[in-house]
Image 1 (cartoon, rainbow, N blue to C red):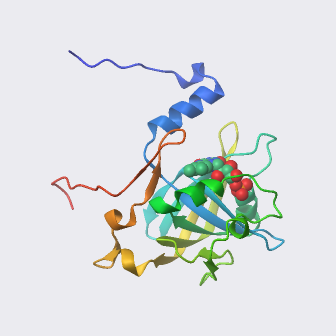
Image 2 (tube, helix red, strand yellow):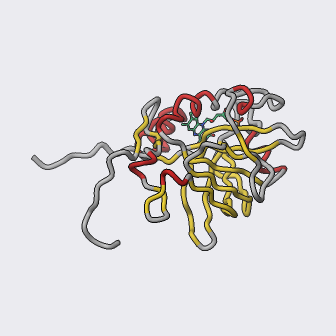
Length: 204
Ligand SMILES: Cc1cc2nc3c(=O)[nH]c(=O)nc-3n(C[C@H](O)[C@H](O)[C@H](O)COP(=O)(O)O)c2cc1C
């Protein structure tokens, strides 16, 4: 039996259908568990899965942040526009419940980090704190911002200026995916993790 495809023109879909299609199609998505600090000094933590690596020289990542229903910036975007600094943490499977809880929209003067009682330490280079126990933390600074699409969303390119890698997860000096069980986001409330990597022969 030949395979058949359902072909969809996104222009014919409504906003919600387009969103559902995107998040179910572009999978798995890494999760940037992102701490920032407001101009009033309040630290903020929130997850974003429209996130990815862009370049390694210098190390650069991309983060895309949607707007609130009223069109205003989410706290993370506001803080990145004002201060230009963030710490992006890679979540392990056991971070899942705290990571999801940190996505609750709190007022700008409330801190998810304090509410969830997460231990932090000072970052080396940037102002936002880093989560003490995170598998990986990427201290990052904004190099580019632009609005994209009709939302619009706020797209940030961030340069990683410091990597923090938890020693117990390293194999030959690099984070080991199986040890780390890094979380990936699928559609809706579904997630996967990197506990069962496998090798495909070919280019190393
Ligand atoms: C796993 C996960 C991934 C998310 N990814 C995104 C994303 O890519 N873009 C976005 O705008 N919101 C995303 N959200 C929702 C934000 O985390 C949520 O709007 C949060 O309240 C923003 O917080 P802030 O206002 O403190 O920045 C995600 C939520 C979860 C649980």
